[in-house]
Amino acid sequence: MRFEFDIEPVEQARPRAVRFGTGVRMYDPKKVAVFKRQLGMLAKQQMLDRGLEPFDGPLEVCMEFYRPVQASLSQKERSRRLSGVHRPTVKPDLDNYIKSTSDALNGIIWEDDNLIVSLQAEKLYSERPHLTVEIRRNEQ
Image (cartoon, rainbow, N blue to C red; front, side):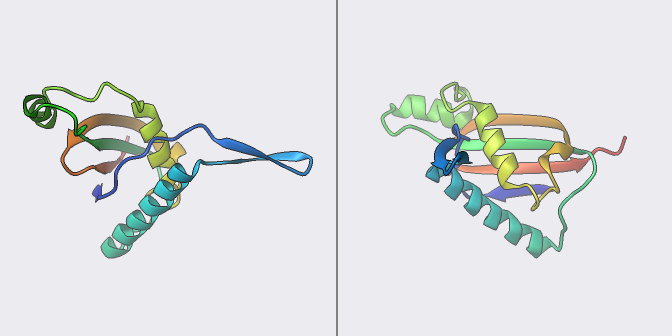
């Protein structure tokens, strides 16, 4: 099952902390919280449109994160990046994209991200930033 989301990927940033009486409350930075909420709404709509319930059991997942090409590049370098010759080797880290996306899809596409037993992920450039998630049940 393949899902495509027209939203620019956002990396999971370090959680922020605020004192709350005698304790501490941890929360996501605003940019991350907004991304997770928007991605969750997009995912819920696709699940509803397809008449699906959240997946359970062992899952194999493939994620592709399409980020924008910097505007300050030459046309030659821009075309190299869009064709895949030059891949994104700059921050943010791939694992931070994975974390924010898997957290946002918890309880919506899958019951919990602990069900993911196999994961493949890529960072790519695109004129249209978006992300795709492909899910297969692990039937072993």
